[in-house]
Amino acid sequence: MKIDILTLFPEMFDGFLNTSIIKRAIKNNYVTINVHNIRDYSTDPHKKVDDYPFGGGRGMVLMPQPIFDAVEALKGKDTTVIMMTPQGIPYNQKMAYELSHKKHLLIICGHYEGFDERIRSLVDLEISIGDYILTGGEIPGMVITDSVVRLIDGVIEKDSHLNESFNDNFLDYPVYTKPQDFRGMKVPEILSSGNHQKISEWRLNEKIKRTKERRPDLLEKS
Image 1 (cartoon, rainbow, N blue to C red):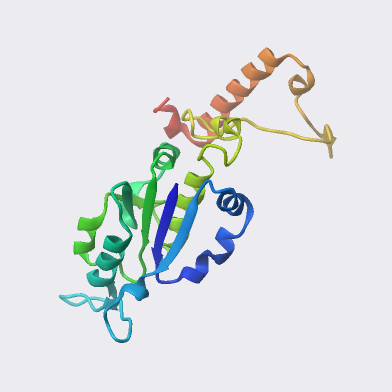
Image 2: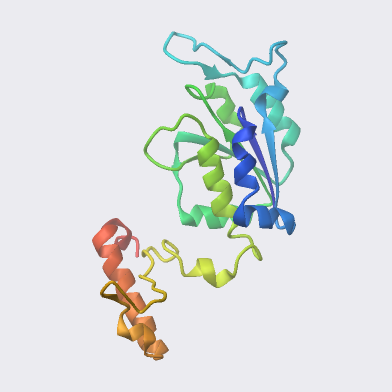
């Protein structure tokens, strides 16, 4: 897979791309990730990328020219262009799986007061990571990248993500490790019983119980 990220602040991705699973995925050639500065595509002598909105209003709006030129330079026949915006479709694990099978993602990270509306004509998918506002699309872009890369075959063990929260519209079951008794809080005896069928039944019941308590909305989808 190849991922290209368009941003006004490429330095924000330095630590993200050089840490943990993402770093290993790049090193082992499971994914290629390139971060591009939108300003590099501006035709303005001062590399200007934003301007005041027509009709008045507060803040600055990203101009179409730099982003159009950037997308047209980077896009191929297998590219899925994604805009990070609060107005997008709410992101979930199902979408992460779908995106993990794409060959090329081009993620546009906005800033300031948003995008010139005409930029939307370039986009295949608009995504929001939640009903709140951030200072820019860089952190949401990292969220998409992280959630997708870890699902690429070979990046992590397949069983690790097949049993996670949201894969079956349930939250994950409780997990424990040593010691068996910590400050009076004990690991459920069933987990040390060696009876794998009973353990599986316990885990399923706990998933249902936890989902009912914390995210009853998910049960409606199950």
